[in-house]
Image (cartoon, rainbow, N blue to C red):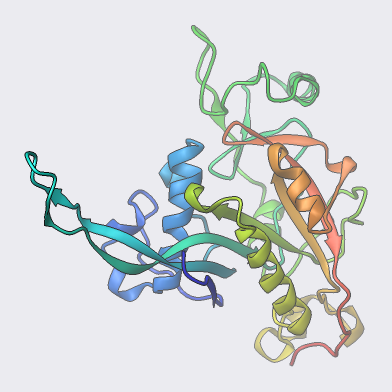
Length: 314
């Protein structure tokens, strides 16, 4: 493996991306950023190919508004195998190879706003919260049981027990929920957790993936250090612009009330890789509990970067 290098893609339009098709079968591929297609190549290999996440659930609406980091490596690949004479063992044709640059790791940082923190014990399929047909009390009891069971005994969110009726997707969001999630700014207050007061804007690290053949070389750690350095150097990048949105849409009366990022980072981590994120400085947020995404148990983690404070973006 040659010396790896990292490329960063800032938020960009991804019009025409078809989540039901793999990255190399996109009809609008000529108009899509190559770095993003490379990120999807890695994510499909890891999350879809290895972990069984449905392809249609891997791409989401956060991709267009996120910053993406992709690590590449120069890899020597065989294009024609060596041929030898079966009788004498003499080389008839030497092995042929060429060096190709391929994506081997990816991650993204999603700006605020974010949907509400997942309820403890909740189940998500394609970023959609799943509900049973029972009443809310039954839902709360099941969520409590799921949170204590952990991974064992909890089926994939898309599966049901033999003979059981199929689960329905979440009920229609209220107008308040829709406005909060679709707003250009944090809208409304979230539930307080151990490290988040429910109000402060935060960015979210996610979709961290490394191709299996290249694990053990600290690829993810190198990408995180690059992303962290960029965030520390550009703390106001995701802050809302007063000129573009106006004070009315910001729903504030003074510049001091304009939401701005103060270094808080959240991560929805798979339980199996919590120790990796702890090495990066994240801490488990016990107040967020445990939930399941595509059948995989997750926990919330936070850390705060020390950034320079600046004036609101104009």
